[in-house]
Amino acid sequence: MTIRIDGKRMAGDLTARIAAETEALATEHGITPGLAVVIVGEDPASQVYVRNKQKTAQNCGFKSIKHALPADVSQDTVLRLIGDLNADPSIHGILVQLPLPKQLDETLVTQAIDPAKDVDGFHYVNVGKLAAGHTADAFVPCTPAGCMLMIEQQLGNDLSGKSAIVIGRSNIVGKPMAALLLAANATVTIAHSRTADLPAITREADIVVAAVGRPNMVGKEWLKPGAVVIDVGINRIEVEEDGETRSRLTGDVDYEEAAEVAGAVTPVPGGVGPMTITMLMANTLRAARLASGLGD
Ligand code: NAD
Image 1 (cartoon, helix red, strand yellow):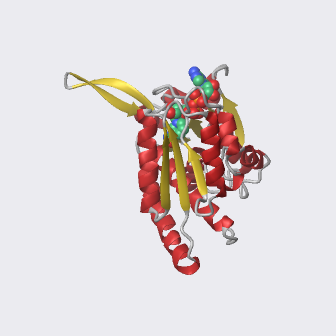
Image 2: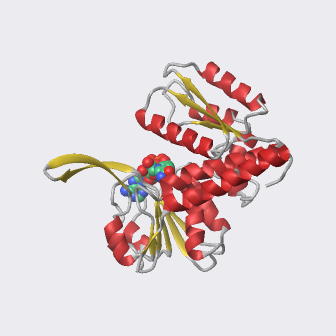
């Protein structure tokens, strides 16, 4: 029977562990991890993400602050704020919610964050460490880090002899995901919009990570029996239910079909999403420990 990988539950368990460690850090060392979230403009999806991140940070016992900037803010103002947060010893993690409005250069902004506070793992210092295989030293982007925990839960830490395909080559998900799988000894293929014969290649893989943004793209004919399937995609679709049109979230994998073939699948919602937020908390706790000379 196919296992439904319960990301919500895994995230809940991990959040509880992080909260307990945070309490111990405060009692034993007087340190409270501090997370600063910077949001620019009024994008509704970004507002929801930021609210969830702040709520989880508070549940973990962190100091959580939000800087909400107007949509027309200047680049200088954003960079000055990041400079202030870099210099603030009570802040251990800085996150700038993406996407940013057009007048702001995302690369300049993300690269202005101190690599030691880069809990999103987007600074080139962290990107480079991950690419070089120094996964233990790097802040790893939260979504692939969460996916990796789910894969390890199913298959263990050593993926020697396993073949993996990552569909999507973004800097936020696809590329770091491939680096993590490679570091765990999997044989990794990265597929993207220019890949030919994608279903045939995907059918060879023991591990499939779909990070594309196309609803229900991966069907049962794409999957090798027993494969572990991680669905990163978040797509809003319209469905007809009881004569009404309703909006629903769906992944890049057709869950029902995948469940007929795969060994384990993550659902959407309730799979990768909750784990992503929890990994942000794990990175912030780690940043606080490292900043205080306590080690990992
Ligand atoms: P992106 O748009 O930056 O990248 C999409 C990738 O998919 C590209 O590399 C592109 O080459 C590839 N692609 C496009 N069409 C394809 C096709 N027909 N066949 C094969 N590959 C194709 O997106 P992203 O930021 O990597 O996000 C991907 C999806 O994951 C989106 O749905 C996004 O909302 C979701 N996401 C979810 C989380 C989470 O926490 N669950 C986090 C980040 C992103």
